[in-house]
Length: 494
Image (cartoon, rainbow, N blue to C red; front, side):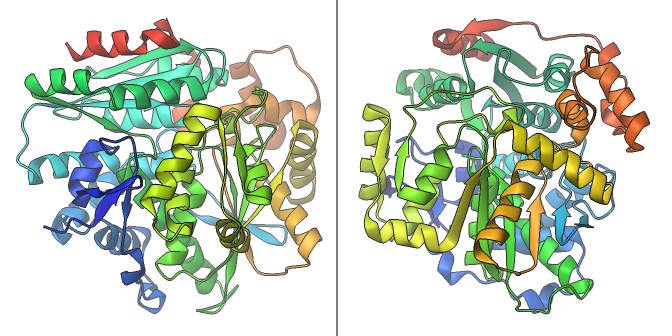
């Protein structure tokens, strides 16, 4: 067995990739990482002319190294055949001097679909590979998009139940409606009185609760995660970096080997971390450009090396980035510390006890070489949506606009004319009020009416999966306090 994964916090806790996918998080609360990633290399010459699914098979086979290749092929086929509205899965579109990788053509119109369409297949394959019986309970915290994408992915998947927690009042009306109307005999949704960080912290506490874990084990049940703390969620996100690059090569925008910038709107750090992984696997990445909103904890960290979550939490027009504890940053710390598990463990303990930590000068240098950061607040986000639509007829959502503006700022600051790709977050119709008001000013209409008006005025079609959402029956109405999350999970587990 290839036990190529270990906990970020303890090198003596190791795992095969299939068990890492099943467990979601290591028993000490650390995240699973591949120790010898530098031994892996994808020859981009060999990706020429390959489809999205063929590139996915290459990346997944390399990163999930105990999965048989035929099993990976089957998972990819089941995940992406007839599930996306574009045959390209993640088409690349030129907008001004840059490109936008459209990651929102999946069943819930958000970038999370790309990974969450395949995770259930990887998980059931891993389940069979490890001769397990019983039930896997998927626990997920969401700031808006992961929840619906995970619910849709795991709906009626054998041997699973999925429980999603989201911040009450902290997601858009469309996002809430998508979750509240979710069908499926194994799907459970609960709003919590708190923000996304409260939901994420609550889920992590449940994962590391030994008594609860033992209780479940006796009843042949185990926890797993659909958040990007699960390596099975993160690995499929690497694929669209390679695919976007190959589309640039195909259109003669770059030659094989030329470096490319990627600008990413970032909250939990998973999506941009996938780019860091892609670079480690041989993709010619110049700079990873990190866009934050008013919750600019990552901007401060990349600039100063100090991570400090002790600050005001802002509810913004880009709610999927309203996060102060960026879980996936822990994986980056592992690599930039020279894979020093003790350093990571100490930093995470400081974060838990004081809410902050500072990395060494050496780590700061590595991070600033790899990443650039900027933060974009409400007014600039709205102005970017308006300017891009007026200049290019392209409609950005409120998160993608943050990355687009961050890229513009980076270019102005550095005069770097490297070809650049902006990773999109979602269809603009998932945040139709904010997008509409950016273009046309305030409105008293509800979000579903706005959706229609926005489509009529811009000529941009509403995704099929969002049409008729308003008329769907609400099936999930539960709300709990943040300290009641464990009770809710116990109730569902029974």
